[in-house]
Amino acid sequence: MGAPKSGFFPIKRGEAIVLSVLIVLAAIFFLPSFRTSYWGGMVAFGWLMGLYMFFAPALQLINLVFGEKSHHTT
Amino acid sequence: MKGIELTVTIIYLLACIGIGLWAMRRFRSTGDDYWVAGRRVGTFMNSWAIMAALASGGSVLGVCGLGYKLGIPYAFSMFAGAVMGFPMASILVARQLRNLGKYTITDLLVTRYDHKVVKWATPIIVLLAMGAYIVAQMKAAGVTAQFLLGIPYKYSVMLTALVFIIYVSIGGMWAVTMTDIVQGILVFFMMSVVGIVAISHFGGVGSLVAQAAQANPAVGTLAALPLSSYIGAFVVWAAAVPVIPHIVMRIYTSKDVRSARFSLNYAMLLYAFMIFFGVIGVSAAAQILFPGLKDADMAYLMMTTKYLPRIFAGLAVAAVMAAVMSTTDALLLSCSSAFAYDIYAKLLKPNVSEREVIKVGTVAAWVIGLLAMFFAFNPPKLLTMMYTAAVGLIVSAFFAPTVMGLWWKRATNAGGVAGILIGAILYLYLLWFTKMPSLSHVLVSLPVSFAAVIIGSLVTPPPSDEVVEQVAAWHK
Image (cartoon, rainbow over all chains, first blue to last red; front, side, top):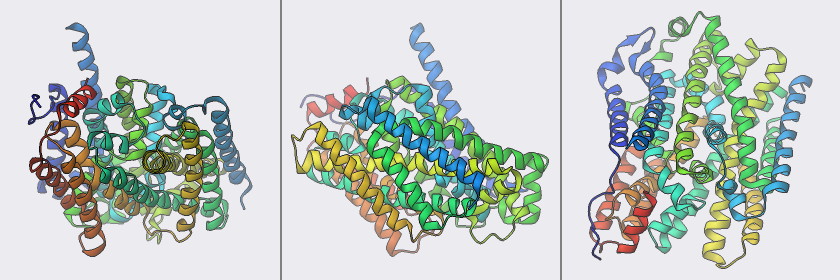
């Protein structure tokens, strides 16, 4: 019973950043200003959520590729 | 009955059965082969298979119907949630699941929380929720074949159900993977083509949305439902992906951790392209061309017949069936594994041979598939809403115990049990006995499940060193 019994397993810095960015961005898009302003017939929220679908996996792929590169160079 | 469309569809269905037979002859020798395709599926194959597993009938008929009826922003908020779930799964669970090297979500929870309640409750929740998901998918197949082939609804449900039950039961995960790749490519192509053709016909994305908003301003607004429903739609899917059984099984099939993590994200880029152009093209154009559709889920099929030649209408039927089957086959396999592997082999008859478990899995696939088929004869009204409600149950029960169990060293068996039971029961109570806005129930049940894991863990002794070291090994 000597191992630490509290705390979390460590998460890689890049992954913590990706996760935080994705959560914060989604929260921002739900703010009232994006739900009431219209861009070309649709609320800004709609367009932003559409773009978010591309951004989320792309960001994590970039993180995975850079993570591998830095792993190889260290 | 329409000759060209029917011929294309029959060729497609026969090809699926052929792939099942091929998989049975070539691979079906061990439990690893049957349940997780021998853990040898590479990145390219798994990307398409994962995309197809998520791209259900709901992602073709359902998402276009949703965009048409409740507005494009609602459809996007739900599917953006699903897309966000994949980077989340890639970060939070992919490495640990692949390193655990088992077959099901139950394996993970039971290994982490060694308690009888977890052993029974987890597969039962999987069977209930995924059963409802399968019924919703069968409706999609039924309405498609009825509309484009002229076959009565019941017969088209039976035809589709029998084909995927056959190839799942005989070919296991190899058959599911190989058919999913074909189905994924077909769905991607047909959904994107219809969407892009409609967009170019109306002069581009911006022009089409502007014209649709003139025809019906609701298409671009958030007015259809309360805000909590939009947030709930996003959260349900974002939290579902890391724990939903048929996606978890795809992670187990990956040849290694790297492949699992890359394929999850490649799959979502494909999915994002398909959903973005499909929803904008179909939902917006259908508002202009077919205002006041009674069954919004028909929007995609109406657009197909409007813009594409008949041979493509046949491919559109095949594409919707492919979307339905690629998800339903994976769901069916996850249900049959929940019964055969998690309940029969581990609880009812321990020490049973691998061969017998596969046989029980085959019988379970038939029983579950046929039961779902009978329920689908009286279909739900709006596809996506029904299966999203089922997914809400999975999220409420499994997300908090899974994530906390993998990342929080202090999580204990009591915490896991509390998280699963309280999350599931509260969700069902809110769904059936309150009048909360659609899909918002999870906004209450999910935080409560997290609280239950934390409180249940803190009031009981910490887990042993062995448990902490075991979880630490999954992180490597």
